Image (cartoon, rainbow, N blue to C red; front, side, top):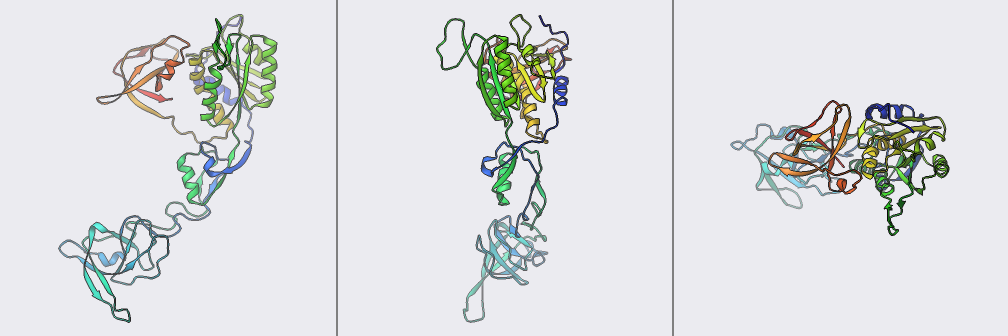
Length: 422
């Protein structure tokens, strides 16, 4: 019977797993930009044109020559002649000369001869001057009480991005911000990595599909669906492989088929040290180098299996739904990121909070504890969700997880902790 004699720290175990993965180019596809949220770019995205493509105003006010306002103040205003209004969405049909201004709105295109915009708050109409010519129209006189510098309240051509600039590097997970930026440049399609296929295989004689009525001693399959949701959120393509019974031959056959069809295989249950646990043996049969880690110094999830079999990563998770989800965040997500070609990992969303209760831990072991957040007098308060093992709703009631480092014997009430949001 296997025993957990060499428990690796989670960080060391993950490094070993990732270092054992072969370097393979990602498969690439071109998709419409609006559908590319959470996908990973497969090439540098270059700007086909500068942005902005024209000099534009950032405020409502008057376009003018900055030097015409130098020295303006409440006691000694500058006076300019308004010669027109600049329409939105169209280039100005006129240029400005010294002593002239034109009404402009935020986003409008500056006319030739201008280099700044004075805000409406620092200007006001004070009268009109007759204009000579056939139209004999009146032009408004504008009083300016504050000087502006050249370039003030405007955006120059290419000030956001220059033509040919790398705007989104290869290996970037696309957020709404990148989607909007691509559309601003007219990039209606993007080349992205194909989502890695993540096979999810549940095992256990007591496990039944969620749509079946429970008989005595049976439980519904939780892991397949919670892990599939996690995989989707991480940018993978979950492949639900169903439930296999506790028979080694059946598990080997299902795992072998999945290894050839998927980029990553996740097997839940059957990883702990008991006579009925056969996941490690089944994984070892899939090819070398095989099992790299069987046992991680973490709670929950000590009986985790990490393997690479003929180039395919295989992860054995505990059957406990709480352990499976916690461990999947530690190991499955980084593997999906590697398979997706992700090069730029952003910090995991987290908040600081004051711990409401003491949390005990065993020195030398990394613990992850679910907590519920609530607003306190001086920020967030984190209350541990204490529950017995295997209770999925302990995670449902939580907002995130806190990490108890291995060099600590626990955390004390009142400590400021980092809550990793889930």
